[in-house]
Length: 336
Image (cartoon, rainbow, N blue to C red; front, side):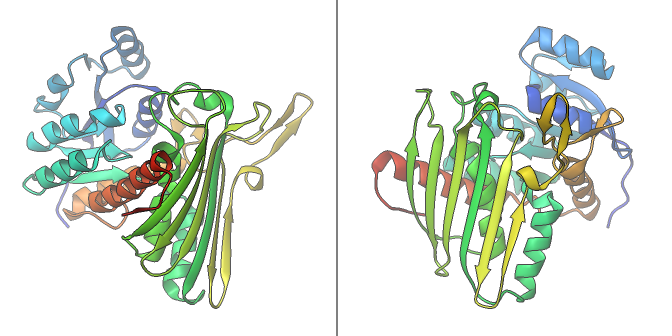
């Protein structure tokens, strides 16, 4: 482990709603300081610079990347803009935290990973579900062998329709949400090859479908079914309803969220706020997102990636997700 001068000075590129959530997490971590912001939207940039009291606010992300005072670049742009910002940051000697999915194409992902091999900084891809303590406990149970040989996995990840209207024309439910469960399945099984068949349905006639049903057969023989539904009713009381069931030859396990997490009932109705991924407490974001950053800092100290932010694992999840989309378009089984 190498000594590390902290706090590390962080520049965030991409200030959509989730970029702001990342900023809320960064300001609550003593080893980090939010030092620079970048987005192409001048009004948004001005507003968030004022909110976080950040002086360095740039519409050109290269101004942040080329700043010698910045140690870490966080990329939370649209996924098709990931490659250029991440490669530029790595070549500038920065540590890079890249939000999933790693890129929008396999070739871009391969180019990005290849570029990172010759750079000094740590390249970390954030697949946040690996930091949900319930999924971590599931992974430990599977790895211990107490379930025996894994034979099947079932997941769902469903969101209320009003939440998804903001971004369904830019990204769909498979590459945005099912990729979480794909990554978890690959992590749990250790598989990297197999085949996929997908069916989708569009309800609202956006550029991407509302619903996807995905069937995987992995090289180990494990069968997996994944549901992702971006058209849950507006009255749905939770932000994300997620579920995982793993069946082995000696036992099984289930991970639930949605109505199994924090429930609040008042005269004004019933709600199920996030208490796992990025809950707000005393003005900062905590939960799994904070834990991601703690792991990222640890990786920087150790000078190498842990199992949690590996770019090659992120690329494998993308490969399967894109194969699932291709299957839906072609109406046939696709190998990956």
